[in-house]
Amino acid sequence: MSSHSPETEELRQTIDHLEQRLGLCNSNRTNELMGHYWALVARLEVDFRNERDRLLARSGALALIQMADPGEAPDD
Image (cartoon, rainbow, N blue to C red; front, side):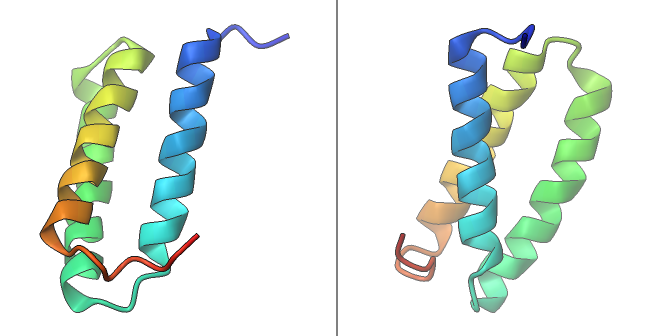
């Protein structure tokens, strides 16, 4: 049985989906931003103890990446 709340699990699934989707992007800008994103993810592991806080920060960063290069992410 998972120790994560349904809300946290849903957030994790959404983040996984966005990471995969943006990872398939052929845009140099998106690829560069994803490099920064992965560095941020490592930093969040150190800075935030609460998993939900880390996931919310990650989702915000992914939303910014999508806004910075709209239309470059592959369709679902």
